[in-house]
Image (cartoon, rainbow, N blue to C red; front, side):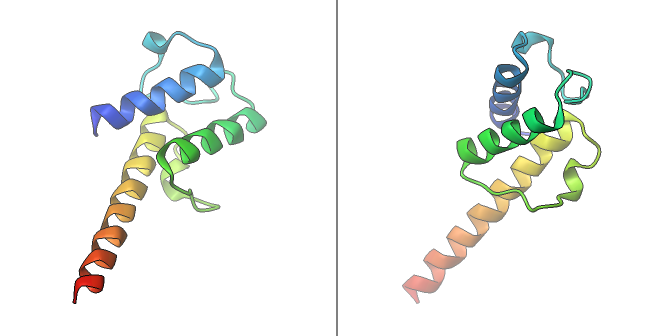
Length: 94
């Protein structure tokens, strides 16, 4: 887990739940923090916008509901995005 990405996700979550960032842990869930479904959607949208990614409608990595699962999903999408970008650059140069 990238600490930089984890910190950014935790900062976004903290802003949405109006909590002290230091109190959040990767093992916690949005539900534990009192986040309702609408606020969870808004949190996801902010994360997507911040990282310029799009979560699939049903992402299996988010099913466990933990912040760690959310961080893992962000890392996976960023990795996939980097791979697509690299592939496009290689294809354009050949």
